Amino acid sequence: MGEGRGGSPSAGDPQKAGWREMTTSTLTTGDARRETAAADDGDLSPPARRLLQAAGDLFYEQGAVATTVRQITGACGLSPGALYNHFTSKEELLYMLVHAGHRRLEVDVVAAQSAVAGDPVAELSAIVSVYVRTHVRGRKGARVANREYPHLTGERLRDIVAIRRRLRDRVADVLEEGSARGVFCIAGDSDRPSTRIAASSILDLCVHCGEWLRPDGRLSLDELEHRFVTMCLRLVGCEVTYRSEARARRAPRPRRAPRQVTARPDPQGSRQTGIESVLPVGDSVVPSGA
Image (cartoon, rainbow, N blue to C red):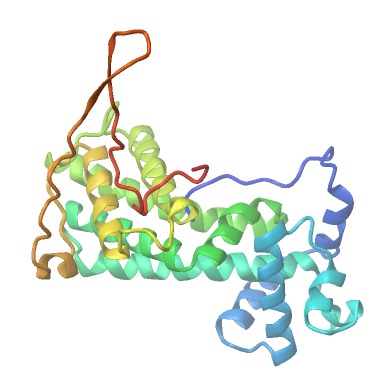
């Protein structure tokens, strides 16, 4: 869940008919605050919680636009009209899910950064760690929050975009401070546009780690966090090697001996060098298309 502008679906969207279910009410700033307070304070009734859970599952599987009110209520064993006893529209369901994810992330980021305040390297490392763990552990909610939030409209959309920009600007502030102290070297310059580009790149890198991580792979979450922090520090020209506390406590793992590259003749009579994979089979970090 990083910075982004967002926007409502275009008029020419072929799924516009399905989208109408999401925009049946007009929202004011006060309405948005009441909606989020209901979700955050645990004021939802049991049926409302079931509807919210079912909506989250369906939005994850097929997207908010393609999901109908009938599908959401049917998953809960309720009639379609029952949704409106608890929510004003399908968009309200989406907003509550998206806002809850973004708000929790912002709270965790602020807490982690505050714990190491005054050290730009430690602050950036803490923010990256929170992002990686949040998006790997909460893969389903993170995907709904990041993929579906542009389908919100009006005040709801503005609220989510504001959170995303605050998170981006928080990282940009850290990069500016680190540049001023000489510990970061930002590509382009240390001006605001350059630090925002770098901040957006770092957050995008972290946001998508949950998309391609293979749960049964070799890397643990702690090791993945370590690699991402190291990559992000290098992205801003910092050569400090980050080690998480859990990683520092473990005994170093012996390195594997390099594999021998065997030359084999090709059918034409010349020599061709065999190629070995850089990552062993079973590693966690594989592209989503692999």
